Length: 282
Length: 349
Image (tube, rainbow over all chains, first blue to last red; front, side, top):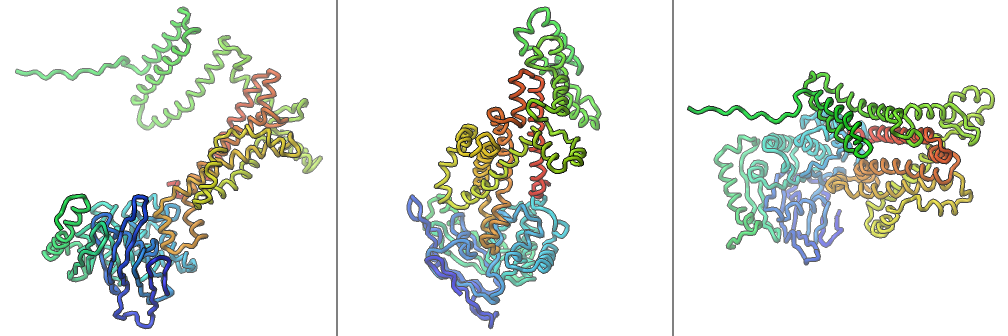
């Protein structure tokens, strides 16, 4: 199955026979994105290469404007690439290809928590009783059982984002795409949700591509961290995070964590400075 | 040895809450022999109002906390009543001419007379004498009840408002949503819509009278209301669709919504608050337009009641017509708000 509505190609490989096969879940080869503006061509993403293995958690960090969100949107099918090749292996053609968690919650204010979580299932045509049961399960898992009938206006920011996470998990795609999901939350709420994500991922074994601007967050959550450069957006380096799982907030107090965060900052520092307009010798 | 200066007292012109009231009264009475009322009545009234506000603001903190909501309600209801009472007294005192400003009591009497009496000259009554429905139903059946409705001014106005409002608002929502969704449609229609939007719709009433086979019938009246409602609703529906948070549209697409599902689950509910503010505007405008039309060309309707009694110089009944128009406006707005709360429960929290 091929999704090819643009210059590049997305292959959706059906490989139900061998779900644990060695072929990666996501393969991006030379994916690029160019915008035509009246001021000329802007290159948001240039020859982006990445492989994500089944069950792996990959965080993408980089200065603002490096195209990390653009890549995620292309991967989600919400935007089109200008060139390159993107392959997403699908192990079960009945399941959706991916589920997205957006930065600004993006839950529907006019639907209750239950209706929001069940939304993706409803769009897939899942019968009402079944989708209500699934929604109830995930609402319970993110600790919002008391608020199942509430509207988003009655929830705090952290609770709204938990609804968005429950909606993505209830959709039951193997590939979870998260675009700075905790970026708009305060520090304490972010910590509790990071632990919640670690727990949910370890229980579900999803493949995760996670865009963030938080270095500690990236090291805490990821198996590998992709560092990007800005203007044009390219992969600068990929950092392995060999910290053992299960992880928790306590992981952040270990010397290994500090060393990895330092290494990541070292890789990123010049990029951030350059993105902010400082002259940095290459 | 140093001394601490005593805190400077704030200048408080009135120690007690009723002192401003006393001053207002003194001022108003003293202005009388000085002959200030006829030349500077607005200055005196404005000063009295400021002093009244000052008195009430000094009174409120002295009241027990539990009674303060009651006090605020009493202010909200009491001040308009005080206005009506002063109007009454001023007219009774011969300061205002009762011919142009009939006192509230005679307006109330006129309203009562218009309600209970049948106008033999115009073959109408204000609300259609609903207390006759049982007996007419018994003697003449359905046609008798219909005749009662036909003689009612309020029914005539309401049927024109509702008829025109629905005929205009439903296509208005459709066209507005399409304009919000499709850039090409928007580009092609925007200039025309904006131009017609600012045109006072009453100005096209003569054209509508030419277009309809019966220029004096209900057709042109309903049509002018419909056209007024259409543009207001369409422009607001367009703005509502365009104003939807793009991330919600992305979320809809990301979770597999097709075009129909997007419209139903994302676009329409997202645009609904602005669509409703358009409907509210359209309903108010409908009432304005229909009263104006009934001034010009009608034998029934609340606008006709006002204009007819102006022509025969029965000003208390003219004012009664204004009161009915106000009541209709308040009632229609309350009805729409009720619908709004039913349709958009998520905004109620």
